[in-house]
Length: 162
Image 1 (tube, one colour):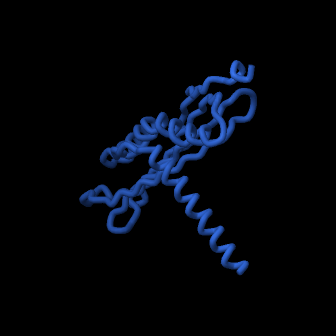
Image 2 (tube, rainbow, N blue to C red):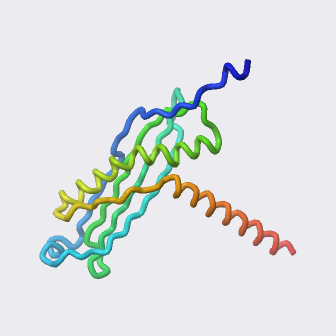
Image 3 (cartoon, rainbow, N blue to C red):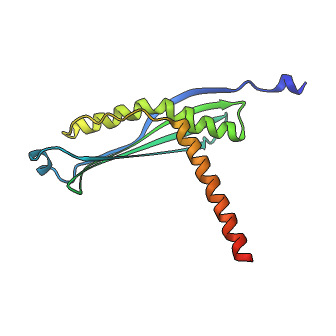
């Protein structure tokens, strides 16, 4: 009977939305009179949380920050928080965390990519074409990093007690 009650795993998009977006051009207008040879830095971050209320809904937020520097000064700063609400059933623990950390950001990435590009263009800068991201690899790396930190903390506390 327990087999019959088991829910089939489900992961479905309920809503995708832009939660926050900002674009700064601190060197304007001077930046537009010089040659554009910036150093670009792209930071990614994801977080997820259960949505209050009924249902098995989770919010996943993919944050991308693009910083363009001209001669060590920030010429352009774009930050986009692209979010989605996902209905997740039949997944718990590690499987749930994995779905929210990989499938959610994979679905949100095309939207955040377009938002970053659009903000750059509207700010008077050339397009910013974000390269594809392997969220599965990032998830595995984060797990390995957390495991290594936990092991080094355990080693450090064992050494302190001796």
